[in-house]
Structures are given as structure tokens and as C-alpha cells.
Image 1 (spheres, rainbow, N blue to C red):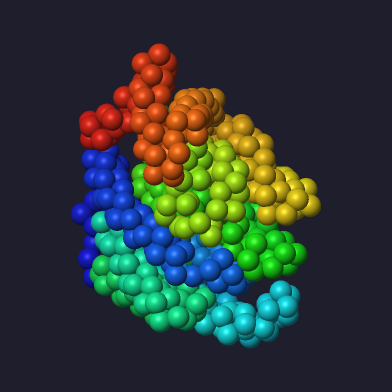
Image 2: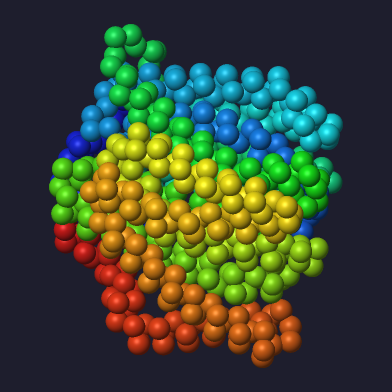
Length: 495
């Protein structure tokens, strides 16, 4: 049953610009706090644990992580995207996700021995069994989060994320200080999942009723099935490299790759996911207003690509001093892997708005066809690079992302009537502009500094100067920056 009802009907676009602007502000504030917690966790735990500890955890998560996609079954996005959602349908979705989470948790628990046998690592049995609990917790949390997102209650959603991450990190650090090694990472995941569920349930002010018969659920399940299949292909393309490295070279090499990959995914997940949280319900409500839809889409993409590409450009240029200062000398072999992955991350983020089009317009079937083509291309590149070890896997992954970027914009322009050429140009300007800034930062730091701290200081100054010059001499880039600075006011005006 629903304890409260939103003041504005779910399908209404009344005051949408103001609500989107407020939601974006709350979401980004929450994600800023979450990034601080997560980055702090990376620094603390990387100094307390070894590459082998991370490698052991990555062996489990790379294989069973696909269960997380099965657990969601695409039903969170289906609930957010739907033009109407009754209480009975929402109740049924809760029980479907919870049942899937329970089933997957039991499957992972029972199959823990097979995971250990695959890697020839007996320690993985207990790790996989403990991690199996997280699937039930996530399954129960799926529709609570969807409910908050659909109601544009982004402040409460951020509270759940930050609270779960913070208490999970505290528990992980305490376990690491106690000398529990890789168990600290498992404890962090379980505690974080449990706390996130509790906060979401309280914040949503909604208690699910019993399952209902005779309620139309086919559209949700069809949409969710297609989306789940596409997401599964995406997951495989992202993580097959880790499976290959773990199988061929062992836990230590995988630990180095995993930390580099997680440093890449941290800003992607912390910015892309909340950006989608804001963009999906807004764009879904504008499906029947093409003009406003394109404006919101392009403005949202502009903000996203400039923020994330700027971060990756600087991180790639200054990877060596950043990793040395924050993670420690023992992680230096991960520098070149991270730099190669960061280039791929740039191509991934400039293509991300295509994902918004697929979701918001209910094009799950078309997304699945695209995913089959794009992800198989990425997987082929990864296997091609695997011959050269972890660095080759990173290069193959980044090459695959670069090849699929133009394909994604062409695809959504054809099947979703999206402004594909404008989306492509948005990404291209960011890549060229921040690429120049990164090269200047790298050159200045490597030629005029002798210590990691000085490299970082000179690198920051150089990239800021280069950024100012690019804005000054390139009008199109300068207009993008002006659009970002004016986004909140423009959104309110159009609401």
C-alpha cells in the first residue's frame, strides 16, 4: 500500500524543469558526498590491503556479478519509465525482484565450490557464500529505489546511497585494521547493502502489500527482459577481461587490473548512475514532446560529458603521481593500465546519452539488438588483447568502446528519432578540448617536476591554464561551458 502520494501525478510535466533542476542539485550533492566516501575508502583500504586481497574478491564478483543484473531483471527501469503504475503492480514488482534475489543468492551459495574450482582457489568458497546474501538485500531494495526515483525524491535516494556506503566503508576499514584481509571487502559489501535497504524502505514511506492476481504485468516483464539481456551483454563485455586475467595469471595481476578498473568505474558510476536517475523519469515524461525532449537530452549530455571527460583527462595525465600519493608505491604497476582504461572511459561517457534514449522511449528491443552487436565487438577486442596480459585486456576494452561510440549515436537517431549528430558533436568537442588540456598537463608535469607532489601541483595549474585558453579560442566549446553554467536557470525557465 502507498502511505503517501506525490503532489504531482507521475505522468505530469507540470513544473518539470524546476523539479528536474532541484532533483539534479540534490542528486549531485548526494553523489559528491558518496564520491568522497568511496574515494576515501579506496585510499584507506588500498593501503591496508594487498593486490592479492582485491584479486580474490574480484574473482568472485566478476563471475557472480551477472546475477546482480538478473536480480534487477530490468524492472527498476520498467517501473520508472512506465506512464502509469498502480499500487498492485508496484507490489507485484517488489515480490518478483525479491524472489529473484533470493533464488540467485541460494544459487551462488550452492555453487561456491564451482567458483573456487574454476580459479583453483579454495578460499573463494566461503567468500562466495557470504557474498550471496547481497543478492537478497539488493532484490528487496530494487523497487524501493525505483519508487523514490519515479517520485523524483532524489534527496532521499541520495541519503540511502551515502548512508549505505558510509557504514559499509566503516565496517570494512575496521575489519582491515583487525587483520581480516580480503574479508574486509566482503563485510563492506554486506553491511552496505543491508543499511541501504533499511534507509530506502524508511525513506520511501511505502510498504508492499501481498502479491496480486489478475494485474497486468506483461509490459513490465517484456520491457525488463529485453533490458536485462542488453545489460547482461554490457556486464560481460566489462568483466570478461577480469575473468580471463584471474584464470590465466592469478589474484595479484587481477588485483592490479581490478583497482585500475574500479578507479575508472568510480566516477562513471557515481556520475552516470545518478545522472540517469534524474534524466530517465524526466525524459520519460517528455516522450510525447519531441522539442522539449531533445533540449533536455542535449543539455543533460553536455553537462555529463564535460564533467566526466574533464575528470578522466586530468586523471589520465596525472595517473602516476595520483596513484603513488593516494594508494602507495605498491600500486605503481597499475598506472599504465589505468591510463589506457581512462581513454576507454572517455568514449564510454560520450556515448552514454544513447542509453537514456533507449530507456526513456521504451526501446528495449532495439537496445538489445544494438547491445548484441556492440558488446560482441568489445568482447572480440578484449580477447584479441588478452594475449598481452592485463595491459592488452585494457587496450582491447578501450578500443572496443571507441568503435561503438559512433555506432550508438547512429542507432538512436534511426530507431529513436534522437538528435544523433548533435549528440556526436557534443562528445567530440569534449574529447578534443579536454584531450588538449590533458596533453599540456602531462607535458608540463613530466618536464618541470621532480616529485609526485610537484607533478600534481604543476599538472593542476597547467590543465587550468590550458582549459582557459581552449575556452577563449574555441567558441563552440565556450558555448557548451556557458550552457552548463546556465543549466539550472534554463531548466527552471522551461518548467
